[in-house]
Amino acid sequence: MKVTSSKLQGAMLLEPVVHGDNRGFFMESYNEQIMRQKGLSHHFIQDNQSLSTQPGVLRGLHYQINPKAQTKLVRVIAGAIYDVILDIRTGSPTYGQWEAFILSEYNHRQLLVPKGFAHGFCTLVPNTQVFYKVDEYYSPENDRGILWDDPTLGIDWPTFNPILSEKDKQHPLFKDAEMNF
Image (cartoon, rainbow, N blue to C red):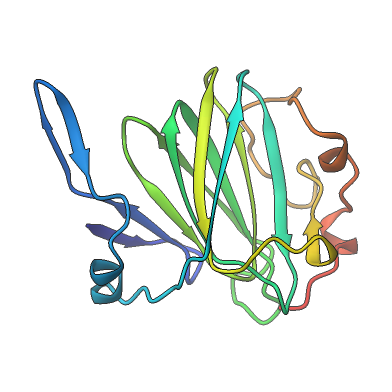
């Protein structure tokens, strides 16, 4: 597995070894022993999956505050997404900065999103399925978000008119969001 550090400290792009032939492919999407060898010692306890039937579905920017903050390992099992992470760790040199990655069923990339990051994605094609592991259970009382199109962040989303949940339409601006990292 190839592990590449992001410009935002702690976030990493993982590219598993894919064995392909005329039948298709095989890959290990997660191997705890290999992850530990690469210095990634997260203990994942919950798997989540979403289906977005249309391109332009935007989910995010989501995170959980302490003590229920989550590290996520995100991958796409069908379709493609524009995946965005935002550093919300107040002491970090990259606080308030974002980075984006294309994750797809074809490139097999996975994104490790550490605690202290907000996360969101926009689907690029119909019937996109996103699968991710987390190291903390979902906690409604610690669930938070930041408005996807906050102008101070300048996130370059691949859509101007996204399909949003009512919840994601109501998130506060970055400057007003509750963060305890």
